[in-house]
Image (cartoon, rainbow, N blue to C red; front, side, top):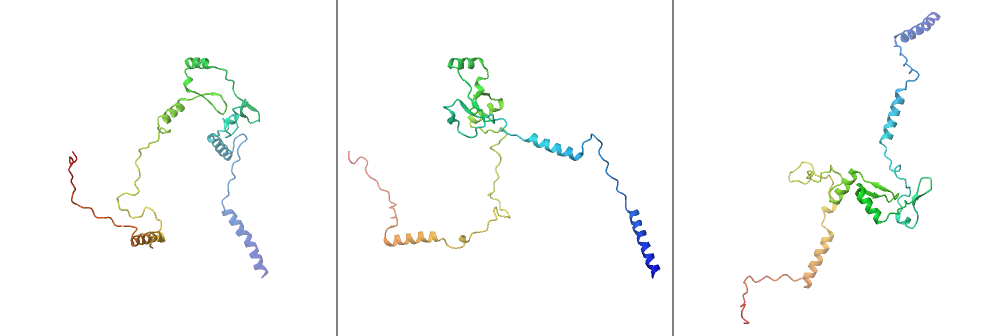
Amino acid sequence: MAGSRGAGRTAAPRVRQEKRRSEPEMEPEPEPEAGTPCPRTEMASAWIGDEYAEDSSDEEDIRNTVGNVPLEWYDDFPHVGYDLDGRRIYKPLRTRDELDQFLDKMDDPDYWRTVQDPMTGRDLRLTDEQVALVLRLQSGQFGDVGFNPYEPAVDFFSGDVMIHPVTSRPADKRSFIPSLVEKEKVSRMVHAIKMGWIQPRRPRDPTPSFYDLWAQE
């Protein structure tokens, strides 16, 4: 018995060694050299770069942070709002009279496309795209040039008989029973006819009536 037990104990380690030899050895991943970025960090940095590249914040362009407060509140004040630091944004001094405006109109070729920004009080020059947009809106056209108002419409309720219904809404319960509102209207009309309040129309006389046009002359 002792010999058999010892043989069993020695056979088990041999089987384990054979299993270990049969398993393929996994090669370790090569470590990146110093100075070369990891591919994961490259993907993360590229994703972050694309995210910030597509981000378009309009708040950076707005210098006046007054918000949606009506600008009429600042008509009697020398400023038009406040900046990010809480300092007042003063209105630009406009000491030009009508003569100066006329001279600017004659000398400046971009005078006709210059508008005043109500948020900052400064003069802004409209671009060609903005001018074209304004002209389209003034002429009653659409703002988007590529918009086609005459696209072929999809006729859902056409004359062709289709297999499936247009909507799968089940029929209401009130469609199977008589309408109570119509019942009340009919009962009121029957009562009015019985009381003589509603008279049937008299049949018209089909014979035409003639008269002498010069009888009084």
